[in-house]
Amino acid sequence: MPSDSSVSRRTLLAGGVAAVGTSVLGAEDATAAAAFQAAPWIDAHSHIWTPDTSRSKLQSGMTVEDLAPKSFTSDELMAVARPSGVGRVVLIQHTLFHGYDTSYLTDARQRHPDVFRVVGMVDDLRPNAGKAMRQLLQHGVTGFRIVPRKGITDWLQTDGMTEMWQTAAETRQPMCCLVNPVNLPEVAAACQRHPDTPVVIDHFGRVGIDGQIREAEVDQLCALAKHRQVKIKISAYYALGKKKPPHHELIPMIKRLYEVFGAHRLMWASDCPYQLDGENNYQASIALIRDVIDFVTDDERRQLLRTTAEETFFYA
Ligand SMILES: [Zn+2]
Image 1: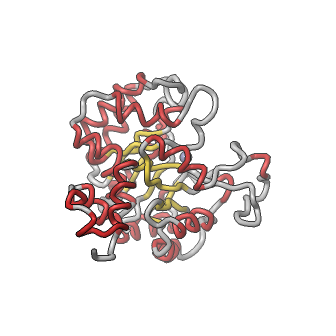
Image 2: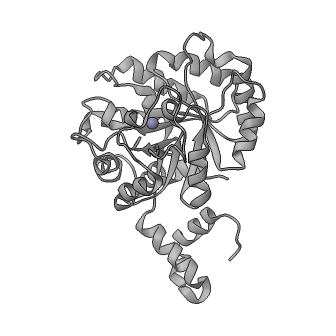
């Protein structure tokens, strides 16, 4: 087999080539095919951390006491994810714990290049943000988290942020916006300024975070669909609406987004490990998309659970 991308090999295997057996593929490929079939889905958003500060330094002001759960390493993450059929995960930079230091995540990706990609962060107030993005791409950082910054009104229009959006249009590393509904108009304006830049909105733009899923805010989210490069993470159910399983109150919003964006622009994600305590759990999160919603075709369900995230983050 060509030794290029394991993802394309997996796609080939998933397409039925595995059926011809080990005589063609070899034992290693047959093992990869079996692993893929056991865990075909991608979680487009999870965090990892370790209390071992010799391996991963915490931001000043943070201590291991702030970590909850205390430890959530890549192994601990996959022990939660795999039983739900999730074999690959996009690891998201945790600003509060790790600031702009992506090394703990890129280390995990280096150890398991078939399993992880990374959404990192660069400081747009420092010079050469675009250069930093290109360097991080070599380490599996295939997207960047951006968040409103305290004290900066035009946070999407700093010189560094403009450089990031311009760079992303070339590198295909999406700008992953962790924003609230109030920020959606300024995100729309940035999409207008940078029509070729890939953009991912985290967690429905946090519509429903105060328990109310307001029609006007869902409308604002849907309005982003006219910008062809925008995709939405349908994720973090533990934090939205009733904030507990079975999460059925979120279905009308998911259906609206599906009708406006199409399944190829939506992706499921857990935001693990934040739903591992209380009434919430990982299985209930993926079950909403895998087992409950009834308005998608089988192919569209695969897009929500794998293909959109694969195309968006596992392209390199
Ligand atoms: Zn998160």
